[in-house]
Image 1 (cartoon, rainbow, N blue to C red):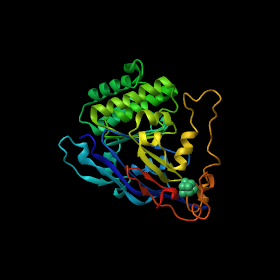
Image 2 (tube, rainbow, N blue to C red):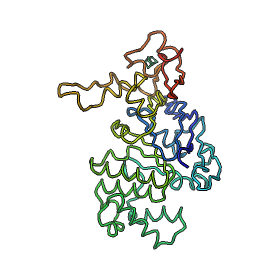
Image 3 (cartoon, helix red, strand yellow):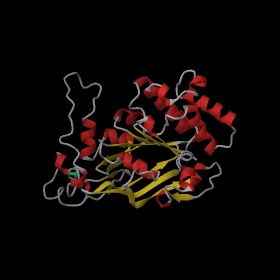
Image 4 (spheres, rainbow, N blue to C red):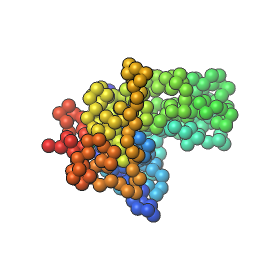
Length: 338
Ligand code: SF4
């Protein structure tokens, strides 16, 4: 079961038609995730990471829409007997029965902001039980017990009492944990985690990441981790996708990426984070300039206005292509074209 391709994203494109013009938020993104592994998606704000994640679940906010590509979910990889079908999630009705049976059960999502998925009107227990009763064959009593157990596993003290609390009665950190419990309780095969621990203190962050890793081992769950935190990526991910203005600039296994980043943008990202052992006089190097306005996408390579290796007449003119390297990584930069 381990190492089967669970999700294959091929040339995914998402656009937002607006009065100011078309925003190409996700521009030809391709990658795959295997069962039991963690894929990190990194990039600055505005790189299209979250929109891409929403697109996987057919949940892009309007007026955004998927305009091309495929997202293939291998349901066979989620079955013990290896039987099942491959479903193109982009072809499903966003409000249809099929995608609703996949959301929460096969693919669950956790967000940076818990109120995105928790309702103030119902107790956390009610909301977690609702997810359980929708996807599992258990009665209310058993669902309540499962909810209490999961609240305990995400580190909520006295879960048998907290199960009857409303979200507004909980602290921000506890709400975050309750939302994570709701996502994990149906043991999804793929967990999409969009900056899941940013709002938490370091100890809770570590606890949550440990729990996610435990579940990975127990059920072979794959994780798509969207984060700014390259430290978390180094510790938890197998593969990494680096995004900039909706495009995948580099894709590599985590060791190669940190040891030998190829793309100028990846190198700039890595230079901009603090590292141990550099002494107190070592200064961080922020990335020059800002992510460009999505309405005025630069011609040629979108990173060219900020790139220290920019080749005038090439990088600002020629469209980018993706180069497949011998070690299996990919890089989207004219420096690597033949
Ligand atoms: Fe820099 Fe040119 Fe490569 Fe873009 S294509 S990252 S501008 S060297």
